[in-house]
Image (tube, rainbow, N blue to C red; front, side, top):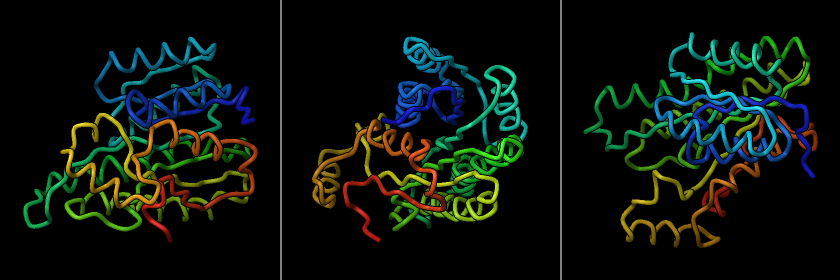
Length: 249
């Protein structure tokens, strides 16, 4: 059984969807959890309450991780309130889908700044305390779109592919201090973002997925919890696909 008792985790974008499932799973396994959210205070309060109901400490921090100062403040607040950071999960992400010839520059920039730059800023902020502790687990949430590309998602696919490169580079840099860096690549997952997809598209996706269904946020959280555990201590620089077999590499 995965035991994270005594650990402190930070999850970016932790108030909804996959992020919320990760927060709750880490808390279920014994971790105290800080998480960032951008604007939905009600969702953040509900997530924090769910953590507290599990008997763990929760810290909700309103932060825009596209801003380096905000990423620094998130880590600093966590250390001041919860004492340390053992686990970082870079989950915050957005989509602004469009075909390349129609994609606005702002749509390109916003997705790169949130999904890739934001992960870098938070990873950078947590590096010093983890190096000092000579231990740590960093898990980046990438996507099958970053592995195989996706039509209409040049910005998102580029950001998520970049996140895979960041994962591998950071894993090499930090390994000598006992810090592991890995990524989880979800396939199509049932969240607020996907539940309103047209029925025809959902059927097509289901047919393309060997296991014949969408994933759940909880299944992504399961993989994150494993990579955060001592059982994954000899795994670093890897991309774990949780996609029902959609992308086989």
